[in-house]
Image (cartoon, helix red, strand yellow):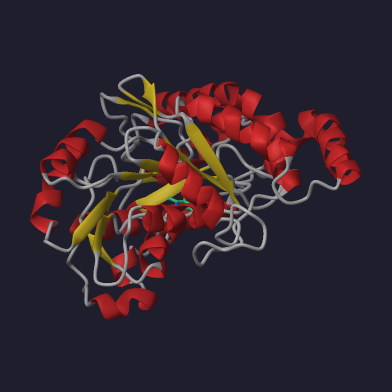
Length: 369
Ligand SMILES: *Cc1c(COP(=O)(O)O)cnc(C)c1O
């Protein structure tokens, strides 16, 4: 058998950047700028510019950025936040951390993103925020959701953790909502050498308070205006992200090339392929196909040297940690069906045409048997 194709290969991206990364990490060690510091400040400016936003505040994770977003919008105990049950759990953590309640709304069957048509029915006097996710790299229907937010005077928070550089109607995600949160977890489209995250906003007061909250609630050292957190980005992560950011557009283009090749090769198969909505230019964080025989297909691909993964097998409303919310099987049929049927094929900028062809051939073999 030829070399296995890993589901994700971070080493391929590290190799060509290694000398540059070594140099900036060494500089950080020489300067001892370990927590925040000049490289983080520079990265914040560069990433804000990339998003077309006025402010970027860097954090130690995307989860921390989402948590602070909830605090900035005054979400607290007794409040409700409308969000998707089909995402990585951290979207809901932010809501739980401030003592509020996630209120789930089902996804759209074709795009996996929150279905705008179902949002209004879920709004109550306790609703404080609407927080959808640009899932798998594909922007949600920003226009439709913003219209509902404006009508009900609700702020929008974008969970953009999977969608650096994705475009809605030609404009990069990050400034459609009051706040947009990103993750730089190593496997994300822009990954640190460890944990990292950021919050992006055009609201200067939010940015100022976010900077204080991430640093123990202080703007002057040892004076604490409110209860804060230790959510600072490390200096080394700022340095690494600064080296990688200039490559992001090229990497996004490469991800789109991989997706289009998969699409051409797989369009005759029984798989349901990712649908790019007419308004969307996906950053293809993931390439997720669907089939009722998903588990058999995954076992077959695993056995034939093709790595694949599940994002996400169990929707959040059915997770043990949220049993107290009182949801049951059948509440969100499309999220549940997606959980049963979706399969993520390998996608990263460095994936070669030959590798893509082998993945597609293995999929076709499975259905030919
Ligand atoms: C990765 C991710 C997060 C959390 O980011 P971390 O940096 O891992 O804390 C939040 N939401 C979504 C949708 C994610 O994919």
